Image 1 (tube, each protein chain N blue to C red):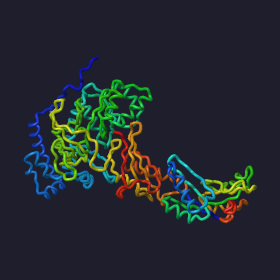
Image 2: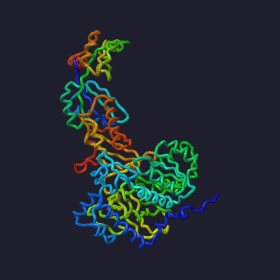
Image 3: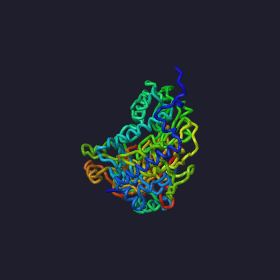
Amino acid sequence: MPTPDPSRRFHPASAPDYVPADQLRGLQLERLQRIVRRAYDRVPLFRTRCQERQVSPADLKSLEDLARFPFTLKTDLRDTYPFGLFASPMDEIVRLHASSGTTGKPTVVAYTQGDLDVWTQVMVRSFASCGLHRGDVVQNAYGYGLFTGGLGAHYGAEALGATVIPISGGNTDRQIMVLQDFAVTAICCTPSYFLHLVERAKEMGSDFSRLRAGIFGAEPWSEAMRRRIEADTGVKAYDIYGLSEIIGPGVGVECFAQSGLHVFEDHFYPEVIDPVSGEVLPDGAEGELVLTTLSKDAMPMIRYRTRDVTSLIPEPCACGRTIRRIRRIGRRSDDMFIIRGVNVFPSQVETALLAVEGTLPHYQIVLSREKGLDEMEVKVEVTPEVFSDQIRALEALQHKLEQSLDHTLGIRARVTLVGPRTIQRSEGKAKRVIDQRQI
Amino acid sequence: MKLTQLSLFLENRPGALRLPCQVLGLAGIDILSMSLADTQQFGILRIVVKDPDRARKVLEESGCVVKATDVLAVEVPDRAGGLADMLGAFEGSGLSIEYIYPLAAGHRGKTAVLVLRVEEPERAAKLLQARQVRVLTREQAFEAVGA
């Protein structure tokens, strides 16, 4: 049965992707004025910060005026944990999600039913942008739970009319069985996990020739990795971007042109700033992505600093969409790293190590990719306090440290004990993260 | 009754063992006996020297992590079944032996001396003596290796 080029098939939900630019700017301003007013009236932290800067919602007469308003930081979510930035009463909030924070406490995000509808809509548009449609069989291998990836992709794919397999993450052999037996045509997961699946499938002699699209996100990955995935599997690999503070996956996504990610800027207004001065940079200049939610009621985010480094691409895209694109994210402007879809700050690793008795100020995090899967190794310098003449005591220490890391970060890391003063210090400060992943 | 053993942390990489040995050599400290325990990731070098305090000092100054542990030097008859007889002292005691390595064997002809690491050295020494096993003093142990 011949199928038409799916990437060209138009989905009605995608109409806002093609709105003329001047019309879009008008809509953005209207929504921006409403949401800034809402945050000002209902979120004390935001109001106080505005007052300190002597700026009020009435000053917002153009999109450029947004630059006068204060930023929101990830630490603001932590400092107001759990519900301090909510702008809706709890009886209007129908869903909470959470992501890892800097001190072991998660950062909590909230959704009204209307917010969830927006999320579903942008996910439908995301899948449509990747050429998916009714009739596709979507294996959703993002984790279901507090992480936004699982449920975000789930509801979007269902609303698109695809057949959703809510398999969640993990259990690789079962993933491969389902991929093959259920004639899966599209998969959602992290790109590193997909590479792992491919390698395991080769070992098992499995074939999933029906699979034609992968919607990969939740961690940075490179063009080289895309080429490898596409050459090895024949699967077209799309990059999807999102973060829970803004909504989850579906903030931006690639189209068939695979040349930058379209930001659904009718709902998420992008700015790129100089991470040091905070000044807004012109289109095309590289800096830190700052996002403002234009239509999220439960938890409006005004000028949220993502720490992701990118630039806005103003030129029109080959696909005809008028919403702007951002370049693929390659790095961050802080020391956070993402491993297996989980955000990790070195300070969290430190907290976990220090939670184990008698330890251990000197450590180094080494990130690598083995068989397509991200691995995290934490090297810990042995001190006289924790050293023992018995192998099993040292192995028990290693195990305790690994458990503490697992407990704090929610991911498994390998702890290696190393000799004292073997971890390289630069400028008196240890270099905490060595990222050896070829992405 | 007890002997001081020094343990050193070693990374599992080429050259890791040589450094502490060189340090001791330069300080003129002879290693009377040693055992090397290894895992996939790291190793522990355990040594017996005549002057453990000085050895510890020079090792720590060179950046090693060192731990001092009390061990027993135990004489066993150098014949078939000799070790089994000695171990009989612990039967029913609940004491478990962490590890054993030889301090001196063979050259005295009739007996061997072993380094014994147990959780409760005092109690272990009493059990051994009750079975007529000779637990050596520091001086006797050093003499056994001709030091």
